[in-house]
Amino acid sequence: MSARHILQAGNTLDQEGGRSLHDAFSALHLKRGDEVFIDLAAAETMDSLGGAWLSRIVQEAARRHASVAFGNAQSQVAEFLEVISPALRAAPEKPRTEPGLLESIGDATIRFISESREFLNLCVDALYWTVIAPFEGRGFRFNEFLDEVYEMGVRAVRIVCLMNFLVGLIIAMLSAKQVESFGLQIYVANLIMIAFARELAAVMTAVVVSARTGAAIAAEIATMEVQEEIDALRGMGINTAQYLVAPKLLGLVVALPCLTVLGMVFGVLGGALWGIVVLGFRPSIWYQQTLGAADMNDIIQGMLKSFFFAIAIALIGCHNGFRVTGGSRGVGRMTTRAVVMDVFSLVLIDMVFATFFYYIFKQGVPGQP
Image (cartoon, rainbow, N blue to C red):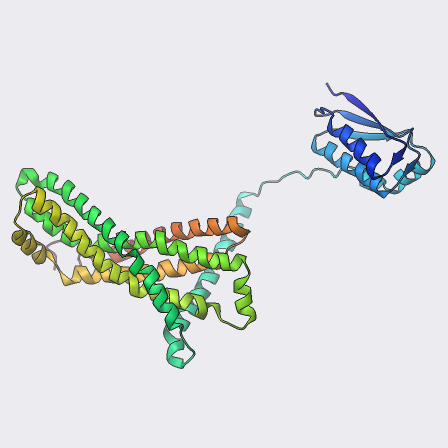
C-alpha cells in the first residue's frame, strides 16, 4: 500500500532552508506510489534557490516513482510557487519504443553503406599517396616508412618464427601418428612443406601481425583522433592519408611477405625437428624429401596471400582508428573491432585464393593438369 509522508518547511526557503528540506526528503524510505506532502505553513519568505531545491525534490521523487504535493503556502511564498509552478511538475516519463524489423534493417543498411563509402575513400587516398603521389613529386615520409618497417617487421620476427615453428612441430607430430600404420612417415616432410608454402605460413603470420600490428595501428590513430591531433593536422593543411596511412601501408606490404618467408622456413624446421629427432630420419633424407615437395607455384600463392593480407590489415586498422568515438573507451572498442575485422578479412581473402587456385589452376586437386 502507498504511504503519505509529511515534511515541514522552515521559516525561510533559501539555499540553507531548501537544502535542509531536501536532506529530510532524501532520508525518507519511499516506495512506488507513495506521496510526499510538504507543509509550507511556517515558510514566510522564499527565493529562487529555495525554488530550485523544491524542483529537485519533485524530480527525484518522480525517479523513485513517488509524487510530491505542496500546501498551506502563505502570501509571498504562494505567489512565488505560482510563478515557478511549471518547474514543480515532474517531467513525464517517455515510453521506450523498440525499433521495428524494417527500421532495424534500414538502419543497419544505412550504416553499412556509410562505412563502406568511408572505407572506399580511404582505400583510394591510400593508393594515391602510396603509389602515385611520390612519382608526382608530392612527397613521401621515407623515414617514417623505415620506422614502420622496423616496428612491424623486425620487432615481430621472434614471435612469428616461434609461432610457426611450434605449429610445424605440432602438425608433424599429429600427422606422423596418422600415417604410422602405413609406413609413410617420410611423407610428413612433403605435408609440412606444401602446407606452409601454400597456406600456413601466410595465414599464421598474418594472424600474429593482425593481433600485434593491426591493433597498434588502430589504437595509435584512434588515440590521435580522441586527442584531436587528427583535427590539428587537417587544420594545418596536412593530408592524413599521406601523413599517417601511406607509411604504415607500404611498411606492412614490405614487412609481411618477409615475415611470411621466415614463418615458412621455421615451420619447416619445426616439422624437421620432429622427423629427425623423434621419427629417426637422417637429416639428408628429410632435407631431400622436403626439397622435392617444394613447388614454386605453392610459394607464389603464399606470397600473394601475404601481400593482400598486408593491405587488408593496414587499411582496416587505419579505418577503425579514424572512426573512433567516445574517448578512451572508444579507443579500446575500435582496437578490438580492428582485430576482429582483420581476422575475418584474412579468412575471406584466403577463401577467395583457395577458390581461385582450385578452379582456375587446379592447384587444390593432386594429379590434375
